[in-house]
Image (cartoon, rainbow, N blue to C red; front, side, top):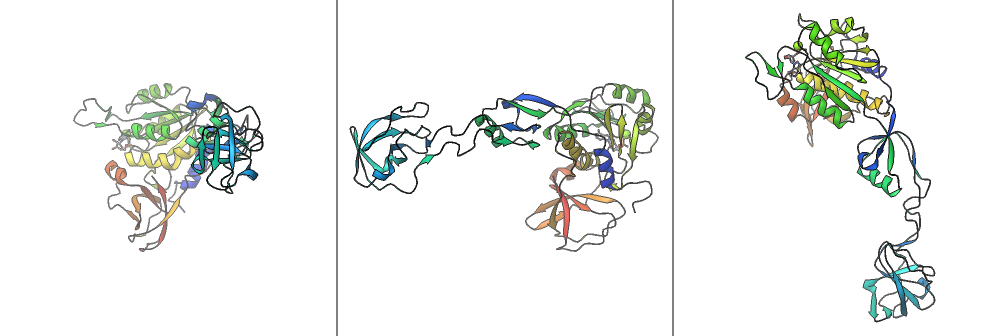
Length: 395
Ligand code: AMP
Ligand code: MG
């Protein structure tokens, strides 16, 4: 059982999934489709190749006639984009290049390296091999071949869509996420901080994470630790599918997010999760927007981004309600028993296995930066030995 009042990570994520739905579909030009998530099936409009095509530079002729020392008369040329219109008869051949249509009557391309040419005559230096050097029409795909959603489109998908003659692609629109840092101590990078101030970092890290994952991110002005300032910042989040606050989520005198969101009519689905870092996480709905309140410590905010925001965003993109997939690695160190909260330890995974850093304080961005994994300790996980297999999230 988690400590009283705290819900398990998986339950928190289920609550958060319930707050979001796939966003609508928009059509984007193909050159803007990379990285977007396909929302509807697309259907190839043609065969590729649309005609039997030569895969080599050489001479198109009849394979049965192609024996060493046989001679052929060159009757024309077929180039990529410009076919030879006639027919290849007995004893004839057509000069042909890669990608060019194979003329009627021919069923074999002798590669030019195996041919001796003398004016309009060629003689073969070899027998025809087993390979015809011809790509039949539709070898790559046929008209009617579909690419099915959901699918995050990578470079090869975009190339395939292009080859299918798809100029506009139906994708999920980018979910709109508004990020709000809160705290009297925060100033923007480039500003001159007062003696008791620090530079806001979480909004930048989360913006980078969420934009790379397919969101359109708006950064709201930093909200001060007053009700009025928080309410103003929330009013600027109008139109967002999801509002994420950072900081002010605990129970200190200056932690006002829970109170203000309640005043704004937030339908809160949970508050506080049995995890480390990230305990004071809250989720709910304000109006039509999902609202997630993240803790302020930089590592907590970014870990919660990986564990909660990224999967929520994926659901909004139509990729299903799936937790970030875990991997497994073998421990290269021993670990003490874990406490009652699921611990996401900053770690390095490499050829020798996985090990966690000694310094796990949730304010240490320098440690997060050199980590490439979050080693996951389930609640009450017993002590672990070198060689034990443990789960982790890759970073
Ligand atoms: P809070 O949750 O507001 O109590 O903040 C916890 C810690 O995180 C404090 O040390 C804050 O100064 C720090 N913090 C809060 N928000 C941010 C932010 N956006 N960027 C960097 N540090 C922050
Ligand atoms: Mg604060």
